[in-house]
Image (tube, rainbow, N blue to C red; front, side, top):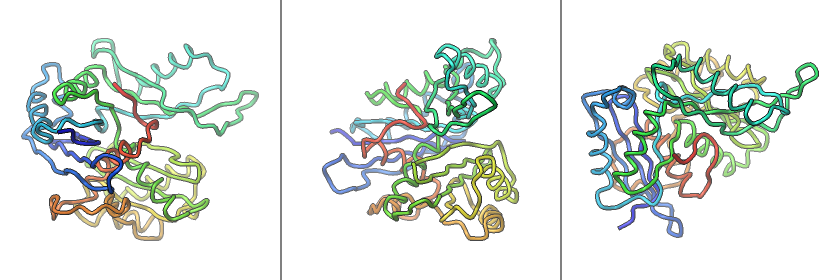
Length: 316
């Protein structure tokens, strides 16, 4: 049996998984769930000895049984992978672009030659050019991940008999925002999704031309979430008046983040329920689960089901 379009998300001590049935049928959730470990999955994938990786592989196998996914996306979060922006002259040659991106990635990851090679790739360049003196500059969105982590993610695919694609959390969330924007016929209005985790905060902004950015900020106190989100928008010359809605997802267990965003943006954020945005009936799938923590996995699986690729990830 072939299980459909699946996503696995690794964060802290948890593996989450989601899958939708193939195209051609009504949009229906095929499976959804999680496995908890007594170790941090990020530390396991980044460590030299890889202790715990086999347990993650076994959990992935148990999640799908003999139903090999048609497509598989594996989502990781900082510090396992980072996306970042670099201004680059439009006229820069390919080798110069690659060299500059690698230098930026090494600074970001605090990498040294002793820590092993880094995989860096250009995700896309924003068409909006910024004129800096006499040079036209594009903003380049790039992904950086250690090769060791990338190779261990590939092993998960081998276990399930499929070549996985490495993603970051904002990849699926950007699809959810764009899908919702189209359904709402939102015009020029913007939508912001804030993902809060104890280790970091994720920001995904969608405007009329589609997902505008997906970015993260290292560990942010709950009370500072709203201020940091607003400050980041202003870096892109986006004001709160341009927003129609602010969504919240991630490991939010109390009202601290919610109240901080409400204070900063003058409106209460909406918990990001991917199944509601996609108009999907969850059926009997984990009846009391926390839907907002599953937003990245559900968004990525839905994006693969739609056939839409590109953005913040590529095939391994």
